[in-house]
Structure formats: C-alpha cells, structure tokens
Length: 422
Image (cartoon, rainbow, N blue to C red; front, side, top):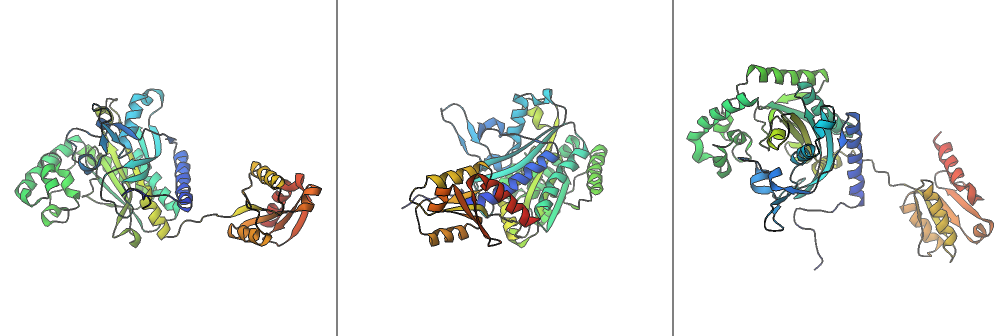
C-alpha cells in the first residue's frame, strides 16, 4: 500500500501553493507598510519557552509535541509564535539595539496534537505579528487595524471584530477570586478540564467549549475594572472608532493562552463556509511575558492568523485570481534540441516564463500543450529557422505570425505585449 500523509498533515499542491504565496506576499506587504521586520525562529525550542507555571491552556496541557532526544533536555515543536519571538528578542537583546516599540512579523509552521478538523491540522501555518515595547492603547488599535485591513484587502466579506479586556493585574486578580467563589458550588457540573482550571485560572471556564453555554456560566459575574484599566480600554475603542473599524464587545472573550492581559480580540467570519462563526485571527496584549522569560519589564501585543482556515474562506468567497498563463511555449520541429533549448533559456534570462517540448512530439501535440498551458506566444523552430538563425512568433491573442532574427526576439516580444495593452 502506498504511503499516505500522517493524520493531521496535508500536502500543498502547486495550485494551493500559488494561493498560499498570494496571501503570504500580501501579508509581507502589510508588514512593510506598518514597519514590521520579518523574523524566523527554530521549529523546536526548549519546552520551558512554551510551558509556564500554572498554565491551564489546552495548548500547553494537551497539545504540545514534546520529546527528549538525549534523555535530558525536554524539547517541544513550536505550537504558537509569540513565545519563540519573545525568547529571540531577549536572547538577541533586540530591546537594547532598537527604538521601541520593536515590531516583528512571522510566517511559520506550528504543531499541535489536537483533533484534526476543517481548517485545523496538527501541522499548520500561522502568520502573525508581535509589537513589543511601551504599553499604549494606540498600539493596540494599530495592531488590530493591521490584521483587519489585511483581511479586508483580501476581499473577504462577513468579517466581524470582537474585543474584550482582561483588565490589569489588580482587576484580573480580583476577578479570579470572584469567579472562583462563584463557580465553587457548581464544581461538580464543570467538565474535567474546568475543574482543574477552577483554582488555577477560572477565567478560562468562560470560553470552555463544553461549559460556556451552560446557564450558570452564562450568568457568571462580569469583571469590574480599575479606573486606569477601564480608561485604557475606552482609549483602545476610541482609536478603533477613529479608523472606523466596526467592533463588538464580547465580555466572554478570553482567548486560549494564559499570558494575555488587558486587550484581547478576535476577527471572525460569519460566512457559512466557516460554520456558525469561525475565528480568522486573534490575539491580545501580554504585560508580564517578556519579564517572566528573563527579559526587561516591557509589554507586548500581537495576533496570529491561521492560514489554512483563511484559505478555506478565500476559496469559499472566490477571492483568488490565479494567473496560470505562460509567456512563451517553444515548439521544436527538429531532432536536434540545442537551438530550441538555448532560445528557451535566453528568454528565461530575460524574465519570460517559458515551457518547451522535451519529447519530440508532433506539431499538433505541441500546439495542444501550448493551449493547455495558456501560452501567450508560440515560438516555432523548424529547420529553416535554425539555418537562418531565426524564430517564428505566433501571437495567440491577435493570431498574427511573423519570423524574426533570434537576437531581436526578446525586444520584439516586449513590444508585442506593450502594443496589445496600450
């Protein structure tokens, strides 16, 4: 039996890669527009980079691919982008060499051992950003804006921004105590995971996939913000209003990682192809993560986009316009392939996309190949062309045909393209 992909992994075939690269190229354009430099970190790190004390997130407790190659060091395949970027920032002391904030973006493979489903695999790609430096609501709004306008530029409809605040340290500590006291009488009704979260991070109960729709969870008390935390959130919303970015407040939005503070957000799709409501990207602010990992006391905010889910939505809304056309197809009618081979390579050296016949097929078969590849020009090379150092050009759009000196070929093709689109 032939080998197949491992469960939770998949192949990106050439057409899929064209779509992937279109999204990646556009994302890199947005990184450049907003002043972000691209970073690449190792696929695996020491486990401690991702696993923090008392972390109750599913990613850390259930989904990480962790191994020990020498029986001593514990290593983990990268399950998310933020921690690795922060580790790199600290190790390379980027905070000492750059003006704050430090803006970093990435397009990286991630790995999580979870149940594979539509748009979610065990090996997947995330595009993300991290903006690290002094804390300011203007930065929060700009980070959301980058992701939102990136999605809108792609052409997706039915996009909605959800935002919430987890408060500052004082607000969050008081809220945790309030939730713990509230949920204790319902402990037996909580799922196994939330029973463990109850005394570690009860905020995570609010967005539990199993418990979040139970009446007693819906009726849980709301967070009471300190004056400064409430002012911060109001300022974030103000800057979103300045940019006319529509948003909804979701006071049950917690996000899946335990290091978030203050602003958290998701951009979701209401397109039927994604189910009732699917997250396109999400993220939030983290005040303590850099310091906890051994760096200075500076804050950060970022988001990550799941590329696989994004591609599904793009296909459903038919936003991809793939250019599969070919500039030139070289038809060779000679047993000797040297002349045609050299013509093809000279064209490629001048930035023309070129295919040619390798097998000595009939003229009819070669013309069919040129049609399948949607070639703009068919270049015919027979015995006469070789003797006279010429090439015959057939323009498939105008149907015109002419024979010219080989040395004039590139210049003539450029002229024909220019003349047609003037």
